[in-house]
Every structure is written in C-alpha cells, then in structure tokens.
Image (tube, rainbow, N blue to C red; front, side):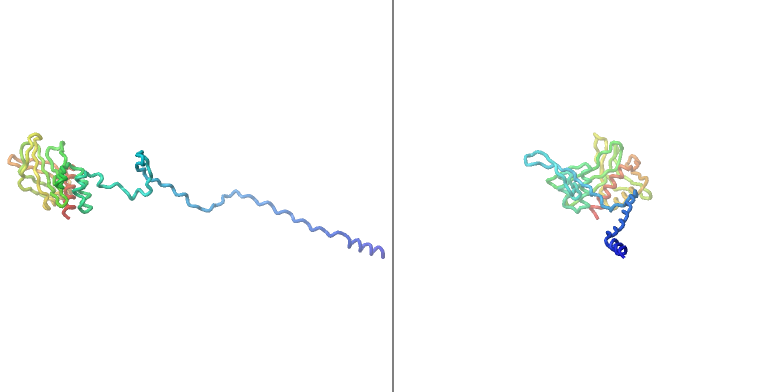
Length: 242
C-alpha cells in the first residue's frame, strides 16, 4: 500500500514534458532568373533654341535662347531691296512673294519717288542670240514683255517660234541697236496669245527661235536657260492676271 501511494505522488510531482521544437524552415532558394522591372518613360530631351544676339544695357553683346523659334521664321521680304518691298507690299500674298523674288533675282532700276521698278534678264554672254524677259511694275500695275536679243548688225524684222505643231510669227519688231555691244534688242508685249505659245515651248523637247529679216533668217535653239526665263514670265503673267 505504501508503495502504490509513493508511485502516485512521484507521478504527480514530475515536471511537465517540454513540447518538441519545430525545425527551422529551409532558407529560400536564390533565383538567378531576370525579373522584369516596371516600365517608366525615358526623360524628355532638353531642346534649346538658337542663340539670337541682343545687347545689354551697357552695349556689350550677349545671347539668349529662344524657346519657340519655329514660330518666328525669317521674313521672306527681308531679302528684297527696300524699294521692291515698297512697290509690292500692297499686293495679294502669292503675287507679292513672286514679284519680290523675281525683282530680287533680276536686274532692276528702281524709282522710289515714282513707286516703280523696271526689270530685265541678265545678259547671256555665252549665247549669240536669245529670248529674255523685261517689264515694269508699280503698286497697282504691271507691264510684262518678251525681250528679243540678237547679236550682229542685221536687225530682225520679225521672229517665228516653232514648237511641235505650233508655228507662231510675231508682229513687226522695232529693235534698238547698240553699236558697242553689236546687238539689237526688241520687245513684244506678253499677251495672252503669246503666253499660250510660251506654254507650248515649255512643254516641248525642242523649240526653235527664228530671226527673220530681208537678209534672210537665222534659227536658234531655245535652250533650258531661255526656258527658265520664259517660265518666270509665264508664272508672273498668271499671278498678275488671274
């Protein structure tokens, strides 16, 4: 009996059993696989405008950038002679721009008091005889002419233009002879009829200018340089006489 009681007391007085400790979780496996990163837009480039010279208060030069320089292009008329600008400024823009460019590219004599500009082609020293352009322009009027230049002392009485099926003969010419340059110059009004002939010449692969006089005739091929002048004359006629 004593032994049983002893056993019971010993069992009741023993310390409580300690729960087993759970093993630590395994370390995560490091992956060497590339991970996608979130996309972000690249930084915008800094756009700098051209440097435009201005003056400081003390007169020393400095420069400043213009942020929106595309909206302030150089004026076309800045390239024109001041007298030309005065004469053409009152016209509609297409005619004004064309007139200003032509009067800048060709030889001119400008009368600012009268408000008129006389113009003409430059002399072609490499061609014996040729066609050119001439005329005069005011703020409200224009006179366009086809200039006929022939080298030599034989003055032309008429010209004939042959281009494709076109065979056009001018009215009688009244040329002025320059004994120093040994050439004669005549002019023909650039009428609508003549304008149509010139259009045919421009579209033709081969066109002939024939000088006619009592001494005979002379044929000259209308070159690409001549056609360039004729094209300008035709465009001017269209712009000024719509």
